[in-house]
Length: 255
Image 1 (spheres, rainbow, N blue to C red):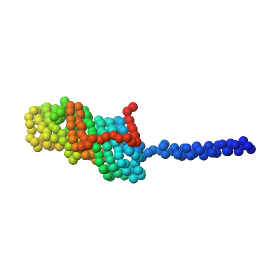
Image 2 (image 1 turned 30 degrees about the horizontal axis):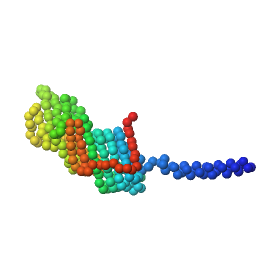
Image 3 (image 1 turned 90 degrees about the horizontal axis):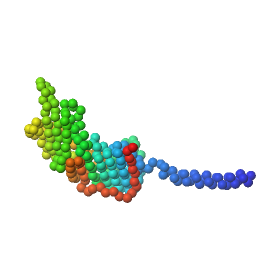
Image 4 (image 1 turned 45 degrees about the horizontal axis):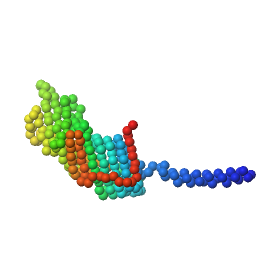
């Protein structure tokens, strides 16, 4: 009888204590709103790596005061972005309970700072797929970025009554349109080394505009400057994004 009372006296309080500990710790195991937010970025942009910093967890209405994103190898509008850093402040999204059903919707944003870098080879892939696609008539395609702009060339084989191999060349610079798109600008087009009329050039180039559309990003970007060299193209807002101390979430798709 004494042993039975002793067991009851020892194990019942212990069980209550364990229940209290696990109950208190369970929120740590549950998915946070920040983790849920990161998962949506991963799903939308398929990045190779991403680091997200928030000053605090999104509240029940979807408000986050400060978000910093450092993304590598993401896709926006069908173009691979080698690196994208972004800081968004005063972000009012839709309620977290709607994210799975309706996706993220940034209703209000106080300010966005961004810097994106696109490699020449990724810009090439996008440009060539838009202009040339899978047409077997095109061959010897080449796109070359230079400090003064972009040079693209390709040969097109025309077969009607006879075979004619045409060399088409485009010389162009870049410009920012509507603060969210990158367009070819101040361009010239030559066929077999001869200048062609402007209306023909405009029609050909119109098919590949815009070269890059970042308006499809969940946060509205306000691009201000553009620069390029032989290897890459960089676009940024007036103020560059800066990291800060906060809650950190990371994802890596590398194996």
